[in-house]
Each structure stands twice: as structure tokens, then as C-alpha cells.
Image (cartoon, rainbow over all chains, first blue to last red; front, top):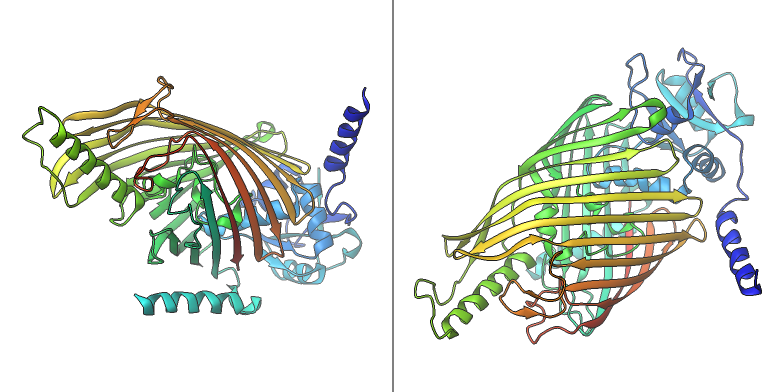
Amino acid sequence: MGKPLKTIMLLLLVMLYGAPGSCLAAEIILVVNHENPLTGITWRAAERIFLSKKTEWTQGEHIHVVVNNDPEVYASFCREILKKTPLQYLLYRKKMLFNGSGIPPRVMNNDEEVKNFIAATKDAIGFIRNDSLDFRVKQLVIR
Amino acid sequence: MRLKKITIISLALLTLLLPMPLAAYDLNEKIQLHGFASQGYLDSSGNNFLSDSLGGTFDFNEIGVNLNVRFTDKLRFGGQILSRKMGSYGDNQIRLDWGLADYRFQDWAGIRLGKVKIPMGLYNTERDSDFLRAMIFLPQSIYDETRRDTWLAQSGGELYGNVAMDAFGDFDYKLFYGRIKYEGDSVYHDSTLANINRRLADNLADPNPDPLLPTHINQCDRDNDYLYGANLIYSPPLENLRLGISYASQKDTSYADNIKIGEYKTNSYFVFSLEYIWRNLSLSAEYGENDRTQTLYDVTTFDGPNQAWYVMLTYSATDRLSFSVLYDEYWKEKYNKDDSIHASGRYNSTPWRKDWGFGVRYDVNENWTVKGEWHIVDGSALLLEFFNPDGTERYWQYGAVKASFNF
């Protein structure tokens, strides 16, 4: 392999794997209200919920989705669950608003706000840091 | 007129200066008020593009405000007003962009009634919101700005839904039917009027002119008789891959000075779409053909499909900075790529458009976006004679910078 080709390959690897914001890597979990009978969910179903494609739990109740806008948590969620960059998910939600196809999920600023909202809302789902899980909410395991 | 402009500019500035908590009104998911404003600068060399762009123009902006009200978990009402200016068109008049009632019975079945965006390709429904896409201009082969009035929105409705197929992924579908309302002051309207008058002038100059044709018309109108179509987006189990197909058919009747002079029919228009996001790279590609027939004064002025496709690659260097490269190709007639007759009746020896575009986007924060791009083009298809009365050049370039704000 010639030197120029090696250099190009190296640059491509840096471009692809030097992910923007890759230093941000909070461990995140999905959380729901204690009254929610579910204990686990498939990755595919989780993705469909946060993309507003799945709007009802299997029992028929409307899902109240909340997006955690803490930069570190939000970035980790986008990359690990949705496999998108934070900007790509932001634009996805804005498209719903501006092309008339729907109202995107509500946004909250941090784990505390998310936990308080989910504790008070039976059919809600959100995501928080793994280490901030407490008695107010229940973890929903991604299978 | 002057007062209206001042009012619009004042409203835009007020919106821009509002602190975020005041600007975005969000009441418990029940009522949401959002909006956007953008201002651009467009320049070109060789040909005028969408406006008198050869000398550069700042007449390139959009302002939109939308309101959504959720009555129940299944029922929503929403609407967006839009004011835009592109060259001497739009003139920042306020118009309804979309406005609808949306009832979602189940995830797999819902209905929207009212003025609904037409889902052709992956990006047509958001063509007026600059900040939603990587580059300022959508690929013109598929999203031709000179035909925006035809494919923007329809008054009628659509059935929609998302169908999950477990291990096989899911698909979103839309089935739509309605009518298009053409604005009387659009680029398309004025260029059609100019083209008809050119044909009538040619008839007069002919050694054997058709005596039944008028010498000149003062106004032309176009009524849409129907529009229907479907859009299907399949998301297979492979992460962030979307495959789509869109189809539409429509028919218009043309009038000159209130007398019927012809028809324009889209026999079939389809677009195949692909979008794939992998790490920091986003790939979009679409291919489309629009088989249309136009008759004017009992003469078929064109009949057959065009051919359009593009590939666009966007690389996100950071969470805020991205670079895009686009190759976009259009042929006016799929089966005759050597030359063609323009709608005005004039001969065109370069009826294609091969566009290399290079763009950069920087998101200052969640609300502000700045973009810039440059395009190098071979071919004069899709250029309006209307803007280039002295003829067009085969090789030309255009570029733009634009700042957008949304809340």
C-alpha cells in the first residue's frame, strides 16, 4: 500500500471513528412509571417510540415521550439508541413540527425533571443516566 | 406595500430578538407555537437562476410561524403561515403553507384533512424550511424550484400510518388525494404566460400562420382537476436505512383570457429514494421520472418522461459543522438527450443539467444555522427563458449563503 493511500485510509478512519462528541459517553437507561407493567422492550420498539412512529403502549394507552436535553445524556442516547448524531435527531423532531406531520416529544432539561415528570405520568417514557436511577421511576430494559 | 414590508421586517426582528422561553410557546404538549426566519444571498455567473441573480440578490428569504393544538391524544389541529421572497416573487405576502386536522386512529392508520404537504421523495414536505436540510438548495433535478407551486401542497387529504413488521422493520405510508391551488403571481405562472406569447408571436411570424390563434394573450390561468398519489418509506432492520417510493398523477386545464387553450397532465411521476446514515456520514440518493403531456392550442408541446437523479454525501465533522457534496443530473427528455424544444417553442441544444454542488453548514446552536454553498453546472435545462431572455449559457455557476433562525 503506497504512502498516499495509507494517509487517505488513516484520514478516513479518523473522519469516521473520531465521532463528534465521542468524548461524551454517559451510560443511559430508559425509564417508565412504576405503574407500567412492562419490564423490557426491544431496541426496535424503543427506536419507534422516540421517532414518534409508535404512539401507543400494547395496552392501548398513549405514550408520553420525554426527551432529556442534558447535553451528555442526550448525545449518548442519540448515538447508542437511535444511532444518529444529536443534530440528526434534533432535525428529525423539528421536521415533524414544520412539515405538519405531528408534534414532537416534549423536552426536559435534566434527569431530575425527567424523573419527576415520569413519576407523575403513568404512560410516560424517558431516558436518564444509569447512576441517577432512584425510587421515583422504573428501568425499562432494552432487550 | 411599504407599510407591509416594514411590518414583516419588524415582526421578524422581534421574533429574532425574543428570548427563547418566550419565543417557543409550549403548554403541556397541548399547544405549541414555533417559527423560523431565514435570509440569504444568491449569486450566479453565466445565467440567471430563479431570479435576476447575475448581479447577486438579497431577495431570498422565508418567514414561517406554525401553531399546533392537540385536543386529545389522537386529534390535532395545526397550521403554518409562510411569507417568502425569491427574487421578484413571493413579495413576502403571507400565505397558508399547510393547515390541517389530524386524527390518528392507531399507529398504522390516521387521516389528515385540509391543506397537506405533498410527500414526493424524501424531502419535499420540508422544502421551505431551510434549516432542516444540509444544503440551502434541495437537489433541483427532483425538487425543481421553478415547479414548487405544482408539488408543494394539496387541498384534500391523506391517509397515513406506520406498520411494524417486527424483525423485518417497519414502513410509513401515505395515500393522498386533492387539488392544487396555483397562485397567480408565481414564477411558473408568469413564465407560462411568456412562453405562450412567444409561441403566438412565432405563429404570427410564420409564412402560413394559423388564423384561429390570437396574436397575444393578457392573462393565463391554470386549474388543477385532480392530484393523487402515494408515498411508501421502508425502514429495514439495518439501522438508519430508509428506502422509499413516491408516485403521483395530476391533471391541469389551462386558460388564456378565460378561454380553455390546453391541458397539462402528469401521466405518472415516480421517485425512488434511499437514505443511509452511518456514523458521521449521511448518504442520500433519489431517482425519478415524470411522464407528462402538454397540449396548447391543440398542439402537443411535449410528451414523454424526463429523467432525474442525484447522490449527496454529508460528513458531520463535529456536532455543529458538516460538509456536503452533491452530484445532481436532470434530462428534460429521457429518450432524447441530444436536443429539445423549450416550452416557449425555442430550440435548446443543451437540455440537461449536471450540477456539482459543495456546501458547508454550521449550527451555531439549536436555533441558529449558517450555510454556504457553490454549484458548478453544465447544461441549461430547468433554466427559465423568462429570466434569461437573451439566451442561456451551457456552463454556469451559482452559489448562496444563508442564515436561518428557528424556535
